[in-house]
Amino acid sequence: MLIAAAILAVFVYGMVIVIPGSIKLRLVDRIGIDDGQVGRVLTLWQITTLVLTLGIGPILDRLGHRGVLACGFVLVATALWRFAVAERLSGVFAAAALLGAGGSCLNTAGNTLLPLLNPSNPASASNLGNVFFGLGAFVVPFVIAYLFERLRYTRAIAVLATIPALALIPALTAHYPPVSAGVHQAATLSMLESPAVILAGCMLFCMVGLEVSTASWTTTYLRKLGFREQRAVLLFSMLWVAKIAGRLIASQVVTTGTAKNAIQLMSLATAACFVVLAVTKSRNVAAATVPCLGLFFGPIFPTTIGVVFARTSPALYGTVFSMVYACGLAGSSSVPYIVGHLSKTRSIQTGYRLLGGLGLFLFVLASLL
Image (cartoon, rainbow, N blue to C red; front, side, top):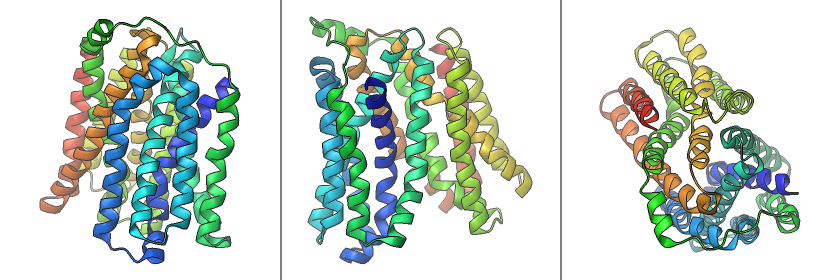
């Protein structure tokens, strides 16, 4: 049950990441809100996620995983129910806030629980667990589209809400590692000031910024290069599948001793892919490079988490993860915006050159880790 609870946590968090975008058009038609109001809903969701991420980690270290996981599943199920029945903008705002809070609980609890399943190689455990995050984020939009074709909006979202609701069973019945007692505030501050944690936070700022920028702008890039919309969407799907495959491969070959070198190699490969995409005018080259990009950058986030956890007391996993992932959320908020600004004022290729530079900076940070 412990493994099931950890896997379901990251799987449902993958759902959480894609739900707003997957139901956005139906919400617009149902409630009659405009793009500006949708933007405010998404901003509330992101702010709630960031603020709660900072707070959940220390709570998890003190109270353990059971309550945080159970709370996360309940909040996500409730958020989906609120999305299903909302008839006014205020109801959508409430649902977005609940979704952000629940996602923060599941992300923190799931990613801190995974390394405990394989303490000798946390990088491998983190990569393998995050395969299921990728599956949740990849599969659920297709599930939602399937449900919308066959059910009314309210019933379709209600069906989706059964996934986090049923996940409560393993979350409540699993046997968790005991909560460590006697962690002093001085020890916590010392760990948060350690070079490994600071470097990991900077790395996640770059890495999550790269990932979200890629998710946000790949289809735009491909369309401007001359691909038809259907072909662009297919290549974007291949990038996501390659990202999942990269994590699965890394879970089998990366060890605690090789994790740092693996991050360096993957960072250089990621930078090279962005440079190729920035300079090429060949659709064939771009079509081959996009999946490679997912294959290379996919394992960087979980491997970085594994390296940090290998140097951290399990008693502080929650606090450390909260700090470094909050840096990642900051990157996801700022880097895609800058890429979009460059795409508007110059070209999407200019934005991709920036992402290539971030890949190189990620290599430098990994060298110092």
